[in-house]
Length: 123
Image 1: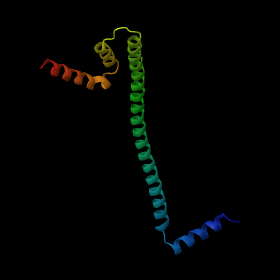
Image 2: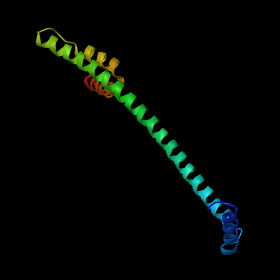
Image 3: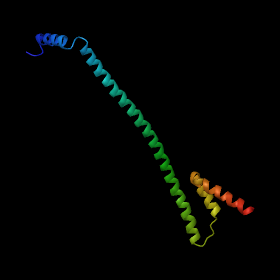
Image 4: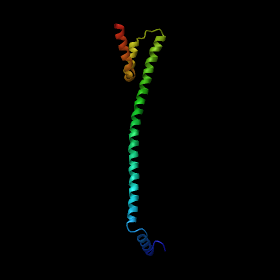
């Protein structure tokens, strides 16, 4: 019968005489270290993945906000174009100011260019 007391004694004798008493603890230690390394690598991968997810979420939120702002700016510009097509007067400065209020990041360069034009026109 395998697994009985005699089998355990034979296994013990073979272990002692074939590899010595220190080898099984070393094998267990190596196995434990390997498992610890795997767990540590998995933890580091998880942290890196969470960091990347946070970065992607921030980028997504910015893109979503920019998309919304572009839709509103497109509506403002479309309205100005429609009024112009109907023969009504359209004040480009007012339209640009409205667009700048809606999406300041996009139109900040436009206001700098406009200020440059005003300075150039005055001199």
